[in-house]
Structure formats: C-alpha cells, structure tokens
Image (tube, rainbow, N blue to C red; front, side, top):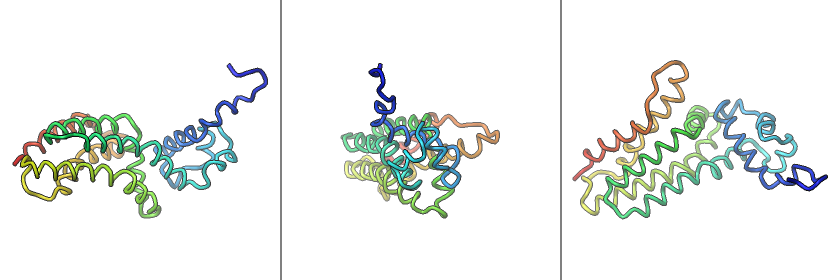
Length: 208
C-alpha cells in the first residue's frame, strides 16, 4: 500500500508511457489513425491530455513509439531466433511460422496492419515506420535463412527474397481476411492452421 498522504500517481509515474502506448494501440486498432483522438487515448490511459503531451507531442510520435516499443520487439525476437537457428530450414520454418501465427492470432497487430495499409496514402509516415521497424526485420531474417539453406543445398535455386515473401504472404492474407471480412459475417480462418499447412506446402515446393 502507498504511505498515507502519498499521491497515487507518484507510484504510477514511471508506468505512464507504457500505459499511454497500450491505450494508443487499442485506439489505433479500433478507430484507425485518422479517427484516433488524443483525448481518447489519454482517457483510456487514465491521464489528462496535458499529461500525455509531457511524453508525446504528436499522434505520429505516439504511433512510432507504439511500433517501436510494443510491436517491433516481437519481430526482433523472431529475427534473433531465425539468426540463431543453424538449420535445417524446414525445422526453422515450422517454428517461425507457428510463432508468427500465434502472435498475430492474439495481438491486435492485424488491425494496426490494416490501418497502415488503408491509410498509408494519406499518412505515408505510417507505412515508413511499419516498413523500417517491422517488415525489414521479418523479411530480412527469412531471406537470410533461405539463402543459407540454398548454400547448404537444401533449397532449389530462386531469389531468396521472393521465397521469403511467398512464405509470409498467406499469413498476411489471413490477417487481412480476419480484420476485413469476418466482422461482416465471413467464416474465419484458423491462422495457426493456415500457417502450418502453408509452411508444409512451401517446404515441399522449395526443396532442392
């Protein structure tokens, strides 16, 4: 318990940036970027709008922090897992596919990704941040893994980066289906099952 007379926000001061970012992630996922309001983010975080400005000056700055601090670490962890895996490639693809599918299945990443795609023309900075903080790491890790497998003779000739985009494409499609069509009545897909079936298909198709 707090000592008598100590303001409750003194204990929470160090937690405020994280609370603001968690609230912003939820608001961006629900409203999109253009419709997201700073006062709603502040209210969900339990702070005043003035207190929010102590940490972030603009909505774009909040979005960059959301991606950098709440989403990118997951992708960096997956990239580290890929980089540390010595082979063979099928084992790596099964593990990475399951981890990525589990991440997008439970986190609001799909809604934010849909927001970035839908609003990138009007807010190109969103796409730039998403690309630099997430896409580069995920696609780069898979590209490197495929190239290494080709050097070991496991994978047939072909552009490693193209193989990488083929590997992630159906998972992204599954996420967009869930965020776009399921809310209007379409039958959902089981994203982990989609990832598993796709990875097994790609393993056979890429084999040397």
